[in-house]
Length: 212
Image (tube, rainbow, N blue to C red; front, side):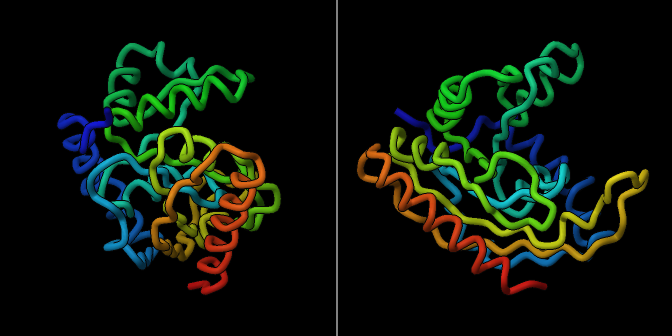
């Protein structure tokens, strides 16, 4: 049975990292705007689905949720003495490079059982314009297995923060728009999973089209 909230140490680290680093950078240097923050369920497991255009997306997304969001990370990072306990407490979970999707799904399920909000980028990889052209069914499948809602989120402008070949992040204008929770699929049937995935994609694109 899932617990209601993330571990206390994780909440403490989240607020420390948010208010000391991420929030000042987002609201200052990146002129960040956040819409729909009150629509985030503050208790219980949740799957946050979003578009993806920058390596800065995970901390920005987590910052805007008002609660920690757990993302997958390379297994090798969990072998670094000082870094490993910190990223684990912050919610990261290890996935082997090239591992089957079942491994990622299993680890995400564990995080949900521990009360986390789990972040999943629908396309799995970054896209140049922040649009989702080939959404994967993984988020819908996990939602169906765990019976937890999906929360669509649009990240606008993050692709401009660090252009290819650039050494220093640019003060790009970033906007984050949070939609309303979508109930989990009733079944794990592929057609049902595809319909929910398409709905998530459409809602993220509708939010993204609102622009700045």
